[in-house]
Image 1: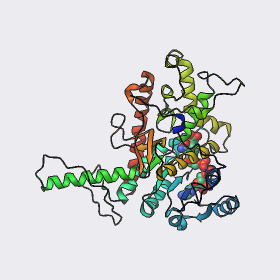
Image 2: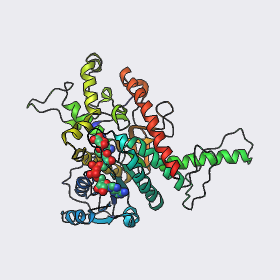
Image 3: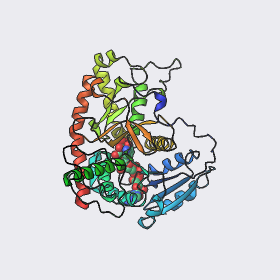
Image 4: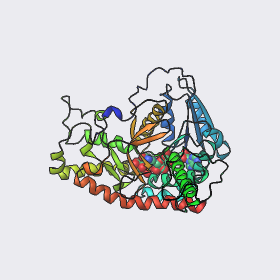
Amino acid sequence: TMSSPKASEYGSQASPLRQPATPNEITKVTILGAAGGIGQPLALLLMLHSEYVQHLALYDLVHVRGIAADLSHVDRQCKVTAHLGPDELTEAVRDAKVIVIPAGLAQKPGMSRDDLFGSNAKIMYNLAKVCAQVNPSAHLAIISNPVNSLVPLTCEVYQRILGAGSRKEKSADSNSALSQPAAPPASPGAAAPAGSSAQKSAGKQQQQQQCFHDCCRRIFGVTTLDVVRASTLSAKSAFFKPEPNGLFKDPAKIAIPVVGGHAGKTIIPLLSQSTMKVDKKRLIEEKATTLTLIESIQQAGIEVLNAKKGAGSATLAMAYSACRFTISLLRAQQGEPNIIECAYVRHQQPLVSDLEYFAAPLVLSKDGYVKTQGFSLNKLLPYEQQMIEEGAKELRMSVAKGEDFAKEQL
Ligand code: NAD
Ligand code: LMR
């Protein structure tokens, strides 16, 4: 049966004012693009979680030394280091447990996220290469747009650099110096006689597939802002009664899985799966209200973009969301069970037709995500299924765009 995650299962409920515990090991988090509109408030929020983060490494092409000097006076037991320009990138990412990436251009009014591909694909490609070479076991949280293309691009880069071969050119080389074969593959197909070259090649292919999946389990497209927006805008909607004091319901108590991707119609909030009971009959019967709410969640980025009149896109709610996602990754890395967050990732077994990349609620662990949680296509309302079908068409193109870019460079 479909078990929706409980509100408390989504993200960090840790109080930012909690006193730091002195851990045995220092946990390092790196921000690539730390001087930007998202990077700066994200750095501040992460410092407030010094019980989880004891070293914050700030990397950018500009301004990071001043930002680090400023932050270093916050009275938390967390050291801050500045890393300026490509020569200092290796040091920035070395030994980090999580690398958060908001590097690159943001939208201006009238642009789509996809319009950013030309500039941000190149930036992401160069950053991903260094991350894969220097610190392949870190968890990557990719914020830069277009997320729908940059995650597949990054997975391709990791696949090549870590020697997982190419899935599409079946017997591609895996002779990288960094080759780290992953867990032994399941027994190869029974059709080929033992020890035959056909069997060996099938075994190798399976091993490459497994290795590829092990890389991709650590590469996350951050869609937490969509989840946060879904909770907040729903809490303020007609579907939930206000509190007696007139305030809207506490959004933290309304977790709504958001699946698909992070752009327009690929942002698919599953209202029927809300943790605070929504009357499913109302969702169907009051379709106009439902669709208005869904659209407001999908268009929330544009609302901010227009309201800021050219001064940038969402940065504060995004920093909040990225902080929540990063802390969830760290908690899962430390062995805390049942940490569930939605994110855009590659799936070994596609959830929706042949689509390998899809955002869904994921159970996190120290080695990346383990499995999806409570996502089952046939339990959804018909219009939710239809939105997924529509979104899948766009996602397919975005994925191909990212993969093709990486292949052209490699
Ligand atoms: P910004 O322009 O304020 O900051 C971007 C920072 O990246 C700048 O400091 C810039 O110097 C830096 N940068 C550029 N090239 C770099 C490189 N090669 N290496 C390191 N740093 C580099 O933009 P922002 O508002 O912080 O947004 C950052 C990205 O996040 C954008 O692509 C935006 O579209 C995206 N975004 C995603 C979401 C989401 O939900 N996933 C939400 C909001 C914004
Ligand atoms: C958002 O959802 O607010 C961002 O993705 C907008 C952007 O492209 O900067």
